[in-house]
Image (cartoon, rainbow, N blue to C red; front, side, top):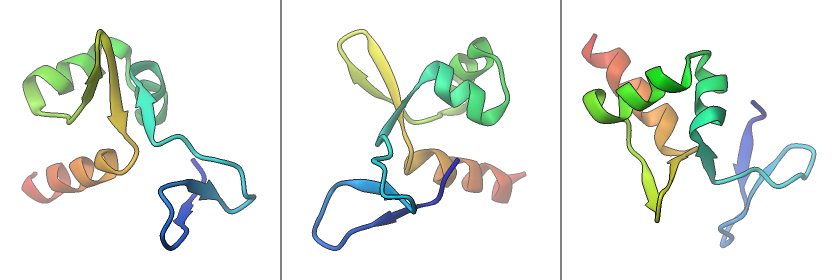
Length: 77
């Protein structure tokens, strides 16, 4: 995953190459980035508190919240 840098005063997230980076990830994208199954990601959501954003039936994970959640879990382990 490319490192993102924030532009001052802008809500857009860009990679070093200048391409837009998504602010939210789908469950399959989270599973791929964590090298886990979709079912395991849903278990992390329901039983371990992985933070999500709901848009109707769509479930998304913030690209900013994901590394924070992982870091919190690493500290408590």
